[in-house]
Amino acid sequence: MGVFETIGTESHEEVLFGVDHESGLRTIIAIHSTSLGPALGGTRFYPYADEEAALRDVLRLSKGMTLKSAAAGLDLGGGKAVIIGDPATLRSERLIRTYGRVIDSLGGRYITAEDVGTTVDDMVLIAKETRWVSGLPFADGGSGDPSPATARGVIASLRAIGERLWGSAELAGRRIAVQGVGKVGMDLVRRLTEVGAETVVTDVNTDSMAHAVETYGSKAVSLDDIYDVDCDVFSPCALGATLNEETIPRLRCAAIAGCANNQLAVETDVERIVDRGILYAPDFVVNAGGVINIAVETDGYSTERAGAMVDRIYDNLVVVFETADRDGVNTHDAAMRFAQRRIDQAGGFRFKRPPSDN
Ligand code: NAD
Image 1 (cartoon, rainbow, N blue to C red):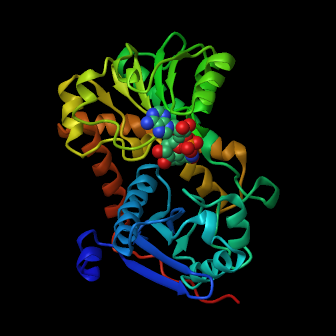
Image 2 (image 1 turned 135 degrees about the horizontal axis):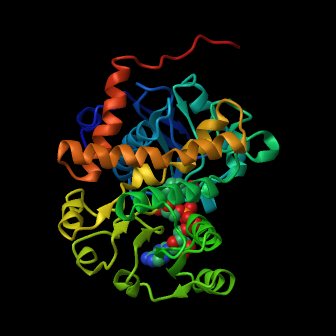
């Protein structure tokens, strides 16, 4: 792969490769944009097939973070990092702390957080080496697990959809099909049950499904049947790419809104959704609760302030719907325009390495 060519295609600002042979650390940090502020995004610790796959992933994910933070109204840019290897066998204090020093060398242009394969304990170790880390435990003044905030953001999105489609943000009596009841999905089901909505769930983990049925009175269906559920909203909360040419024709919902990242198998799948007359709430707008929660941590965490900011996802989605109406585009494109407009308004400004304060 031509590294410069690849980085240039998506206009990344900077890509840093870090290595420590002693611990086996091989890391890539991608800063996509700092137009709106320092680039925030998690660290994925994953056994990539090869370096090219790792580079491709970090470039894609960091760009996604730029859009997500911009659409969420945050003064943050987009970045992401990967550590190549299996965390189960490669993780060591030396590796994580060395990685922390790589982050520190960027002087605040990149702020890390948890992602697939990294844990709160890793963030605590990283914090020994740099202050450019978030997602620390409550006890350390951090924001803790972002999943409840993400679920709260999905609720705000469902309310915005209700107002748009049925003239009411009330969720009581609505029927929501939740694909995946993990950390976010289960909390979403809990919140929906509390406000009197009905839930239909599926999960590869049968214990999780049983928990939703027993605790929240959800109806359980098989992994494949979730697409055929007659419901108000289909909520993808498991993996990406579950909205595709096979599944979209089967959906029997009025709208789609869930926390999963990259829900569309290919971007043009949004047109299939439009053709079915289904309202699509773009994933990176709906699932921004977690990053909003983390952003609050960067200037002193407060649960109340974070909650209030997450609830603004309702307003963000209203703007996306209005942009789609005004510009005659689908909601996915409208969300991209909404995010890009904020980035463009910030202009050519780039967040610079602050002067050393050591
Ligand atoms: P999780 O791993 O806790 O939950 C995912 C659940 O989906 C698990 O219970 C898993 O068993 C289930 N699952 C896996 N494959 C499935 C399938 N084919 N069909 C049905 N269920 C399946 O993860 P999470 O933190 O709840 O995140 C869920 C999604 O939301 C992911 O795509 C994640 O990237 C995205 N997301 C999460 C957050 C957050 O704050 N946790 C924020 C933004 C986006």
